[in-house]
Length: 270
Image 1 (tube, rainbow, N blue to C red):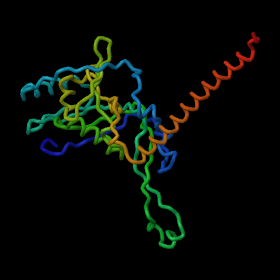
Image 2: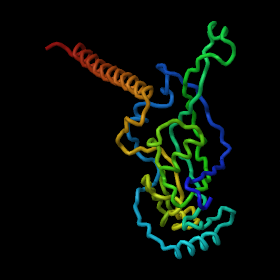
Image 3: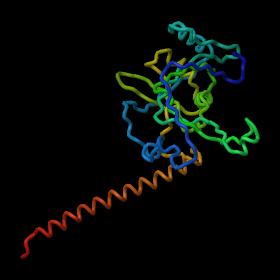
Image 4: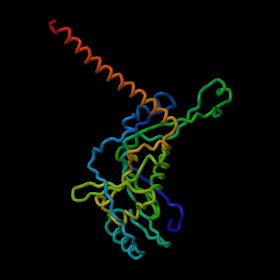
């Protein structure tokens, strides 16, 4: 693996929580039970204590990398060692915690039953592409075996491929999390950052550094990252929410008008 050009990824579950599956088709109810205009289109206030922070990562010489790897391997209590390769790169393990609020989509297929299909015989019916959405286990943890040159974007894409997730990778982001002086800091990694390098610099301590996969909620909605069914569904949800808000406003003013009229009728003349 030391001289391989393509990074390899080895993943293991460390969560036994089951996922909730639900089949979806292109209909009015598609994605509706999972998305609302407020949860998917608007930025919600943060409920945790994570604070964004940026810090510098120094460049290391080859000798410093070798020394860092020796120190790292001497501090861990497992077999998740880092290894130095002949080409100067190194391999090792990173642990990624999944903290996804919304469900993910995976492909599925269903063959429609019809007399014509039955005459064709089994396995000859037209396959209809469908999507199934489900929630990944909460706070599930993955261990990935990666190269030092593996980028954050590649880590995200590998995680999605592992579970056949068809959502656009831009919907997700990899964060580094650190605990310092009783405070929790969170920083979004850029696409080209190398998580294993960050792991080596921070050492094996999870408090010093851990990786988290979350939704990429940047404040602005990246409409290009959504599929056509999702966009149509968002429009339907917005229309229903608009109608509901109008109904509530009209009901409020109608109630106030009624109370004012009742007060006028109750006032004595003169």
